[in-house]
Image 1 (cartoon, rainbow, N blue to C red):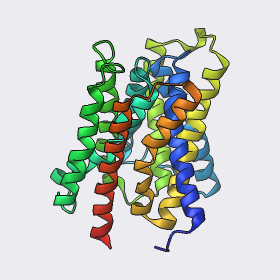
Image 2 (tube, rainbow, N blue to C red):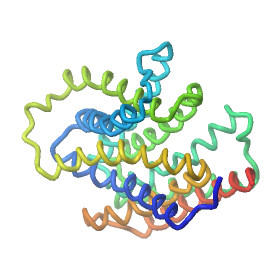
Image 3 (cartoon, rainbow, N blue to C red):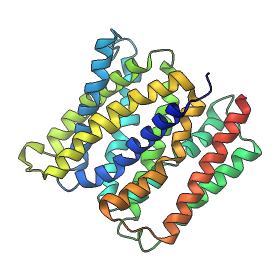
Length: 295
């Protein structure tokens, strides 16, 4: 891979901001929409730019091929479940806390990779990074000002959403030889198929008179934070490789906390700041360990 240019770092930062902005937009979307509706509209609008790119590049979508069951399973675990869990949890948890909780995905993937992948074993540096990162999450749960008995379960559900991304990532290895756009387009299609009947029987969005800000947020979540973000991720991944692209992980909770304060004036306590530093540092240490292993 080429040495990253200044423009590459700009694009990486832009990707981090897009993904980080999803959390306060989810919060705004919950003002009018239920969690199933948010999840459905997110995958629906997210599928539009991805499928258009596939059509433009003449990339075949294999959602209903012999591997349909993998696309359906990954669509459920990597999109349906986490999108629902985050939207449900953010109803009673600050969006900046959700950004920090969800940022544990690289730490959880390292733990899971140790047990299921041959080349992803723990070393001393990784272990230190994981311990620091998860200690930040434990410390965050001790903040009784923001997490109490009324929203403790919601915070856990957001953390479960992070775990879904990890499991979905491992399952994606089963179809890793296929084009990224094909895989993303196919799992988005299956996420829509799975969510549509659930939406009809649990929430009736046609009876909702949504606020304008909620409507804008849910469209943004789908089109930008899901569709455009994935396409930008592919661009960075192809040009600069996985290690460079993965650096976005420790930028997301930082930008997520900043944006939630700017747009929602959410409370930032000392414990939130300490947890943010610990999680970001833990992710950085784990990622640096991976980088040194490759170089």
